[in-house]
Length: 181
Image (cartoon, rainbow, N blue to C red):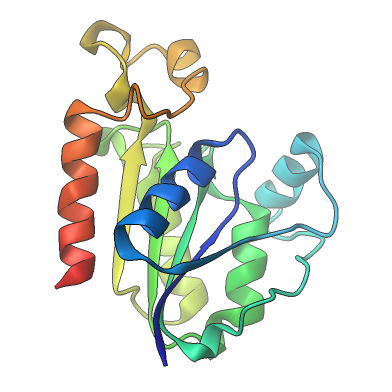
């Protein structure tokens, strides 16, 4: 059995970037989630309705891996439709799941209306049990301190090797260390 598979959904490229970093750090396989239908507004609507058009079949068999690392965005405190579709379609076949997200909500605001804490609880509810780990990477961490609470600045962030430093890199290194234990 293979160790890890990173499965990700990314609209702006932030989660694809994060998935790429994990692939390099862990030396594992990866696959992008491909929704059956696209379009941001369409997927946002389905995310708010807790449904979706479904996703295309993965090329990898999730049951062939000890652990799947599911990586994707949080939109307005919601689990996005492609990630929900993945969990519904493959959740019972997973040996272990780690859920990772890039998000706009800061760690101290994770349980507020648009916080990622709601998404973590929803993932565990869909799995009918706990994840091995849930980890958020607030993209505002790459901004200067005076811009971290500016919603427009946070929404414009695109993770790159140049800005994935400091606090977010420290958080990432701790996360990878936990995964390797």
